[in-house]
Length: 447
Image (cartoon, rainbow, N blue to C red; front, side):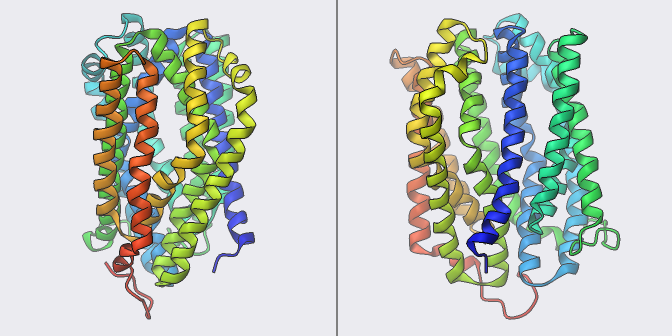
């Protein structure tokens, strides 16, 4: 059903969206790095906490994307619209409560997880954390609006919102940091402004959607409507919660190595996100495409599409890695790191450039596809085991019992991609995920 031309039509705006979003994040890190290593470390700490906290409402947005795509694949626009409306209400309430909880317990979380960090780092982290918590309801709406539009294969809308919101983030952040001398608070104010503008832009697109009729949909939350969303979203949220919780614990291990290691970890992670932009774009497209095939009950084309998307991700990531390899040192110097920080970040970058094209697609593109078929339990179990046994435990052992330091963390990180990818690819070969895709001859989606 989706030709190469149609895939490119979906991929291009998703790629632009990922590129701009990541690029602005990198620019923000560069701006903050001018304040010192403490500021980079503080923002890195809060981002780690944010990734964990946001899963409480992002899981519903993820489930909504899959289920709405399935409803549209089955030709049921009424169910798609009601699912969208009720998901918006649910995500807004969850995101507001999450932000409130983070504001109340934020200092205790920072103290517990990063007690070994320097006082100036923890103080700056608290400032940025408050701004993040305030922006949560806006981020919740931003993500659920994006998910609904992507389910309808409208990637142009999300790309447009990312362009506008990131320009706002950059402009407000630059003024607050450099002109008003607000430091880390300036970066937080830019974040709030960007998420507000982005949510408004997406709402405008959503109200004009030809297939998702929000105005006439029921906003009263119904368990019958939300059950399939939660069936997809809760395991996906648990998977992501454990994944990012593990990353948070790894971040705490890194904090024990000192501010220089924290800064190198943040900088290398920032550059790594740039390298992985094509993979992220393929993953975004995969959710709506595979969900549509699952809704239509087209098992044969679905399997072909999983293999095709994984191969495309490998080719794209390989090309980007080759492009970045000779310029890695020059790019890292844009972060203005100290010499020891630059050396550590460069070693990490060389490692990930070698591993990402080979191991990352099977570890993350395939599970995105499997979730969209409804095969969420298997994905969740594999992800949790790999995260805690390999990335966390192995990383801890390499740091504690070897002299690898921060490199030990990233070596374990790459091994985690392998121990995820192998069982996920085996699942595709066995086609056991197909039991979650009953052939549909009517216009309903099994709940």
